[in-house]
Image 1 (cartoon, rainbow, N blue to C red):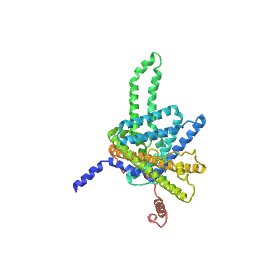
Image 2 (image 1 turned 45 degrees about the vertical axis):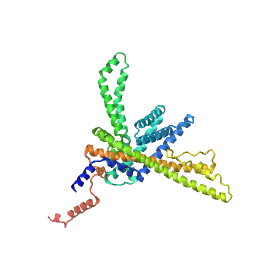
Image 3 (image 1 turned 90 degrees about the vertical axis):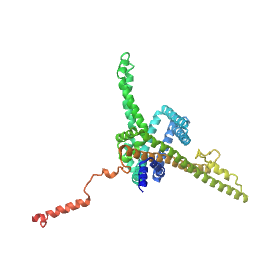
Length: 421
């Protein structure tokens, strides 16, 4: 009995298995709905911006958002596939290709990208903050707050969620200005190189600070939103917490992250396979029904040569690599075109749910990792979480106020004990 208790205590001290709760937390309907709404708003904003750019430029080129979306989707699928095969060169190649596409797109369309990043960050601040809040309460106390309650929390703390990811960027720009100004001074004939050499040590220190902030921002970025959701941190507190956890226990942070990434890839493959099976079974059932209708009409002597091909026009056959294929409306009549568009929108909703699961899993897993890192670094209990009741100042209740008023009135009456004295 004593050995079983010791084994249970040892198992409880090993925290990384708690990351496996992320899948069950990620498929919670409220999280998926929030993520789906965020995906819909971001995609709609990107499509509108593409239409504006194409209309103003007068060229029929592919929109910037469409290019980024397809590149990100291809890179994500490639990384997930390579990760399951433990193909490290493949992971590096896919990430490098995505970064090259993003870098080239930002260079060519920097104004478009800045506006789109601001819109995306604003949407993610509300949606991601709400998902992190739900995940934090669920992991810490087993509570499941409603969708409106979570969105109310994230909207009230929108400033913290929005500015926290931007804080490291501001710090890097502020420190980098010193090196930038020193470089400008360096072009002065004769005196410039002397000034640069004198302040070179300070420039190296500034460069070291930039490197420290950059590493902390990249490694601790995943902990910023959970810090606000768990501890109601402001911008600087959330940034400092994420940095301190990364630098205090970097190997543990890396270990937790690797487990979450591998487990997330496995869960993503499962969810994608489920979506593919759902679409395939539904389409095959429709195909069998269309073939039966064609056979039945043939028995009645009614021509039905287009019945089977109609489904192919409305809904191209899905594949695991491409769940949704845009319909070819070139040879379709008006009714088939309308049906194809409606079916395509329904299929996009299925794909949107798959993307929503990725977003929900990302924030849920990182919320768990934040709690585990906080427990190891700050020795804070896993169930310790900020609640809105802590903001309410202790004020006398209505019952207490009435009782005090009644007591004062009684003391002022002539027949009271105090007056008799």
